Image 1 (cartoon, rainbow, N blue to C red):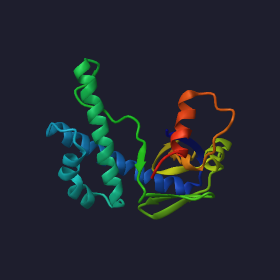
Image 2: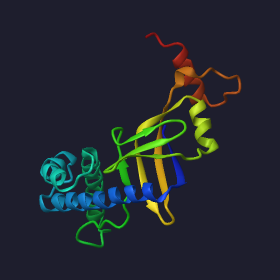
Image 3: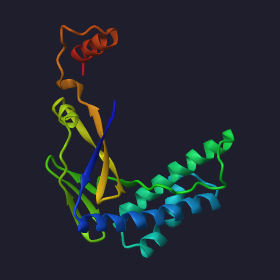
Length: 196
């Protein structure tokens, strides 16, 4: 099971402008990837990346993994658009990019318990959010942070961060006498009686 945690953080002007530059160039790469996918009639991430990666790396001086994640994003959008088109629910000829949420992989962001670091053209920027109680509950139960995250910029120098909590490590849990669910009891029984 995965959970998504959303953080809204107000940052200083320099951090916001560095992230704004990334967002604008990410949008351009995303639009190019979508256009390439439409022209070549493909929704495959591998084909889209193979077609535009080199040209976009030369054009944009972003860290290389932004081009990679933009191609993943474009592939998801193209696939979703094709499904809508088959159902007759697509109202345009091609998918439009209205809102951009920048995808981050494990090379582009780092998570610590006191700050988050994101790669930009100017180097890494540090964001020090106040984490909500629900995040600490998950963390203390043994959940781990997934490798991917996303951010979106809003008005007033506010950055919205979205990151997934990875799967729960069930080996750290003990069987409670209060368990009533048959499925839960059988899961714990399997964990305790496994032979490997």
